[in-house]
Length: 228
Image (cartoon, rainbow, N blue to C red; front, side, top):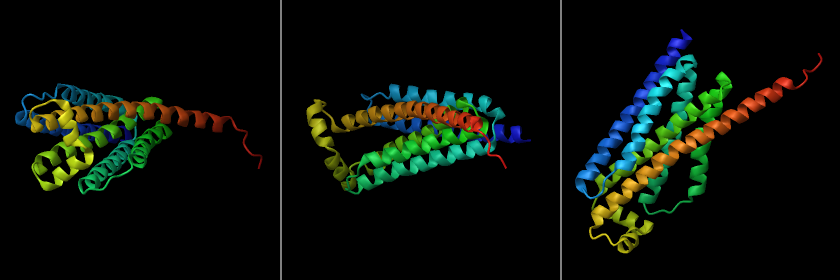
């Protein structure tokens, strides 16, 4: 019963990630329609890799507990909340220190991997849990960035954000004749790097968390038991 439940939970998590991938692809397609000169091929390729990884994770997760999937989801949603919250703060004209934000996000992805290894004693499961958490956070972040630009286009709030970020100066140096095309291209480039590094750091943090957890269990196992 536990194995079936674990497989079902993994399938639901994977389906949620794949649905998010589809939504971000739609947002990229809309931006491409606005600026045909900016082509989001690189970001789309990473998104397809996300969907494939989520699909493969279902088969691997047949032997795991559904609790791992819930922890993975919780850590991913928590990281998404931090990333989106930081962006909202910047929209309202307040500069933030990115170091604490990145630290918290990485910690969430690391926790997912540690929790998975603590449950199964397998580094492989840590890599999957951390990477899926990273995918959730990265997809939500990129989706919010794209959607918020489309909604706030030509608004005073977005113009204020562009001034704070130095977007107008970057546009002047770019040599591109159309500001809208420049911004869409910049968004597509940012989406690619956010998604790519999100996935890569998920793998790295999962490997690290899994290895440290396994090492700690082995050390504790070798310690002499107290004499009662």
